[in-house]
Length: 356
Image (cartoon, rainbow, N blue to C red):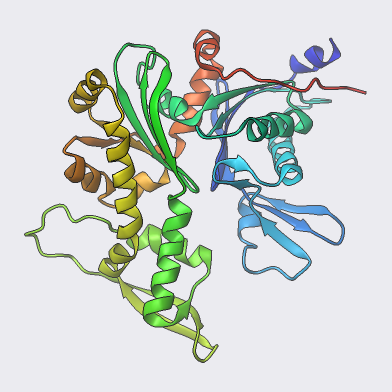
């Protein structure tokens, strides 16, 4: 009863708990938080020093007693205590504008498709311990589809591809459920590693993860629209540590070299899409061919990736509006539509909250 009373003074939250970024949506306000899923901890005092953007700036720059870590790995919680503290930080941040004695919001959180019961329970428990009074879990592709304004409850096939930070999820949706799907651990982080490995092997230069991500964003080119058109080359300068001398070094790298580095992982994603289509019922294949495929997530922003997929599978591919926020917008719609939430929510086994 007391928990429910505190809930009247709390703001219910839709949360996209991503490997790279965590986004929070509040009813009637939209997206209020969009920060990296990174927490900086002082191991000597076990104190949280920073969360989100401030913590990400510390990656690769900390002394030995400070660790900047990501408690979310491949879409699931890898460090329960840190994830709990991160969620508590976001709850407090949402409620800081208005005094609330003990915030007890409802939370709707997305989870990957191929997740174990233990991992599912970890998400629920972390949210409850952080201060949520009730937690609802939603499959990521369902949230993506809703955020893309697809009528998920219709008897019609829709294919969603989300290329996130740690995982790529490919799903065919019909009648409010997942008909067939495939997940693979090749996504934004793997593209960063592709660039790091390529530069190390070709130039004997060691890069940090943040530098590799910046290169990917600036020069990530996977597919040229027309083969007969002249390739527009451009160079970017990158700095790292020379593996031979151990000294700082600067080199120039072209967008076509970045393309070469990314292409292997890109082809593996295309093959996974083909496998998923191969396991899809013919009637739904017909719907997908007519409607096209929706591409979401940060990987959708890689130049020409949609064209590469379309060329390989001969089906139109469309990038959804603002692919980085598609999931949290979909969860936000569920926050405001209890009937739809009831139809597609994943059954949960929540631990009761004890309020002292």
